[in-house]
Length: 619
Ligand code: ADP
Ligand code: MG
Image (cartoon, rainbow, N blue to C red; front, side, top):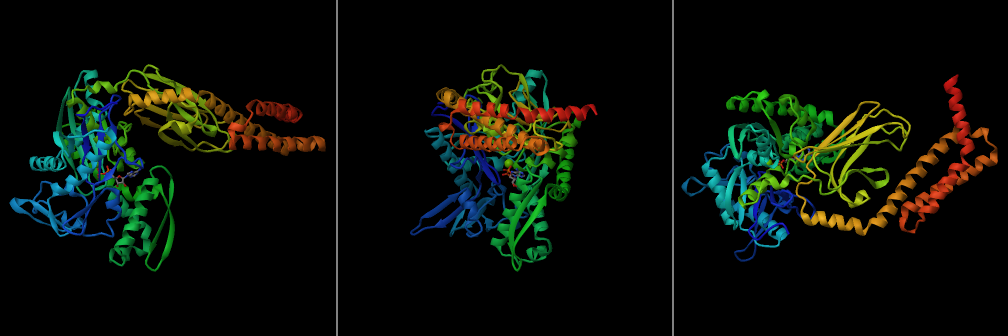
């Protein structure tokens, strides 16, 4: 067990989402809910119950209820915490609940017939995170590091501290969100290694806000040189633009209020989901309904979304320039650019940021999780642990990619000393294949389904060629900081794509031990399955080639010969299909013999093919 009863947890208390992470021997890890999501929506719903009771919902349940229970739900409390009514006048139109002045220049939110301070409402979110940590660690949790925006003043910081106290947490330290992100990437350690201070831009584009900070990191000292941003610019705006585009001619009725709250919310959700899918795919399909129009289905292309969002992204870059100017830094002096916030997953954002700063930004960590991870790293330091721990000098588990049929091709074996590099060539198994999905896997087992997927990306734009002809080189490179850079390149066309991940981050000793033990327990069965996958792939490939040759040269074979090959081809395919359906009942040796026999039985056909090809070539 990695955690001791006085574990300090790290909390990212966000405007839209909040997360909790805990320190561990392989570095910090975020804690997830039962469905694997680390994000807890920062939304609270309160309902009075019989007597003077109160029913509280936090997170996804509260968020999905926001439409139905308007008036009882609060969101974006972070915009209110530690502020007075005059501070937040401009916010009020964005909030779907009533806010009033409280005693001593504070604020109050009236819900379910009672008044709540922003601290009390934030405490519900913090309590839910604390409970998640207690459940995961198996013991009580009383101390936390909490992050706040770099521009928060003392009153806002103090109010955040009070919220934590109400949730039963003692705040050991409040740290700035950009500082946490830089910590998570180990930039302090890198600066120490290189023996000079580092200047870093942290670009944080979330759901509703954009923040940019310029940091100077010298040893253990993180100094915020400047901040800039826009408190109303983020993913929500992209959703809104896409929503208007989707509504098309109905946009007017959208604006005029001809659309009710539920329809609006549904359209918004459809737009957001399409936006998220367009970070991976070139095209997405959206379904929604508007009054009088019934169910509409539309396709949106990534290029359309990018054209809509580009002006807003340009605005974020103008804020970056302002922050650099305030800090007295020029682009050439920057050592790193760090991306934070869910919206930085958009390829357009990554591209524009890279162009603007002339360097590739850090993207190895999940941009939703990086602030919480950094808070947990600070927690580890404050617990007396060392952040050097995460710089393991070997790979604790093997790394590879999924190959045809769900097998794993391992490129770097466990216990390899880092830095290290491995390159392997792969090809296609289908004629005319123009894209390859690369799944980066970690684990000791032979099947992709039994390994952990670290990342995935698509290599596209391969010119159509017959199966087996494209040459795809996959490179795994782990640098001294433990960052794995995966690149795939098709050599004939020069097309390439890649991804960065931190493979060892968050792995516990237990997980490593379990992976090794399980691979030993399943070694025999795994080896058999892997062999069957390879054999079945070969069956597909050989029968496909034979089929093509029959189509071209079949007329030069005696009729019975041709019928025999067709029969054997069908029989072999049936055997492969059965082997796939029920690998345990398959005799791999027998399948291997059948494949060899098929090869012998089609020799004459193959020879005709080769002679033809030679004749063509020497014509
Ligand atoms: P905040 O810091 O504002 O609480 P996040 O950093 O979690 O929030 O960012 C949330 C935003 O990120 C939302 O607008 C969401 O739609 C967007 N987002 C999340 N994943 C993706 C993705 N894959 N592509 C584009 N946008 C995304
Ligand atoms: Mg955020």
